[in-house]
Length: 95
Length: 484
Image (cartoon, rainbow over the protein chains, first blue to last red):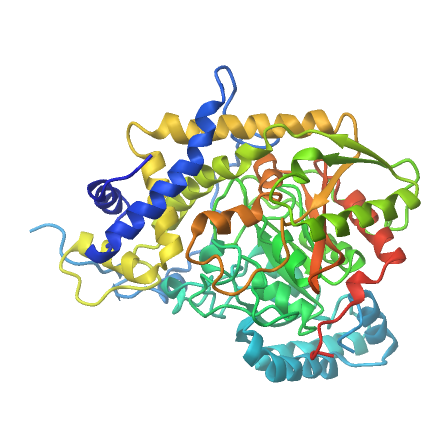
């Protein structure tokens, strides 16, 4: 399994990670070798095997729909790069 | 004082032989003297530690202290600690001050334990050598040319160098057991769901599990007692009752059935490491255990399945690092996409980016079934291998790692060879089983760890088996040269 430079750029875009042009070939090579390692799985017939979601087959627990957390907006936003009037600021999205 | 176990420190504090302030000052002084070379701590919270120690002494004076009140320790920097920087080994979170405490952190605080600081780790716990940390590699106290293992490398090195009597760790593919093995300490990865993941920065949520790293099994039992338990804030936390982990430490091993998977003793295992493990097994036979060769036929598929499941889950978990709500933000973003892409491109290191890309690829349209579903099916096969084995034996033993600690830089350019250093530990994460590594001897003058894998919720038995070995041997009491 070998990944083309164009595919690396495509997944980098999907993952929203800017990678430098000069690093693309290196990622293509190392990711290809990882996919090569992973290919060993293909030799195994897994038809009829249930994919494992939880080691002990536990199901997602449900809880009552009640407020469990107090409002801590200021505290939680203290780590934000840019905040105004309690809102997170990002570059303009709508023209 | 620093060579005492937690049980001994607890007794010394109770009898008034030492105060928590004096103990804390002692460990802080050791960190100051020895850690500049080791780099096992990323943050030392000296002022807060001394204040907490003074409060612990006051609690003891008024009779409200528990057995662990005033005992110092360290947290891996993956656990959120309110008001204290929590960077998870990443530039991305270099400016992140956790706004709340992880469940494990709250429990240690409630017991009155004194946090000395936060330990270094591979970035977002992705690595097996502590070399992917934004804060630089950690040195192995046994040989400073070598790595301590990872991702909980700082915790392992700190305990091995007696800079803290215990440290917390997390284990997604071996990140407690592998560094414990490489640094000559005892580390336990509990059953998946045993310790709350609340406030533990997520890497691969279906595999991540926190556990104790200390010098002895007895100390790990005390610490697991504190860390374990149901937490409704962790959706995969399990409600099973927490037993008394110290009660059965001295139980007889007469009739214990040990399984040795032939797949763990084959090609790739350093012959000197194999010899140490075989000698340790002989010790167990002397204690009355019986030994049987077993097979875990899908072992060779563990690393491949893991390198789909873990990257896929990390690509999803780490999408929260977007430069908007917390963490690194690039300068002058042109638009929202530029903000996301450059903040993440600048904030993440190479290995983290590589794994996110592998995960994004495996989860992308057209590949999901071939990769993620296939890996989850293989996971089932691996889990079934263990289920079958546990009908014949009580627990499984083998080497924790195929070799002793490798040199700094030796594997950092070749991801695959790095991944293979977790070849014996990853299966337990995929199956969700508890695993423990304990010091079993030395090869090439470096520590060798014996791994013990148990059935679900069988932590007490793992600790019992490790403790009995530590009653008969002194490997866990060996100290690296120059750090006495």
